[in-house]
View (cartoon, rainbow, N blue to C red):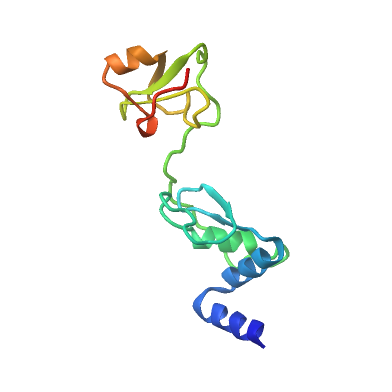
Length: 145
């Protein structure tokens, strides 16, 4: 009985897709969503999902949970241009103790950082050169030596 009431409460406050996603999360222990900037999210709960990415894209998340055999009511409209994300491939020339200095933010990224060699405007240089040019470490941290 409690499960039915919980399901009704959830259904009244969320869309059908969210209910299906909640049921899937209960069965598998994880939830997935697509953020408004196109970034995928996967976690134990939707709490804090897509924080810093513009929130959850409910249309994209609902489409990913819709049954595959359901016919489309209308052709999909052109999606708005998503915010640019870092390229998948790192720029050539890194390694050897060099940092990636992002010229647009004045932040340098250490080898192994997710943005190392991947921001649009940047170049490889030594950490000392980056500091001399006014750059600071990502999240205020220096690279481990």
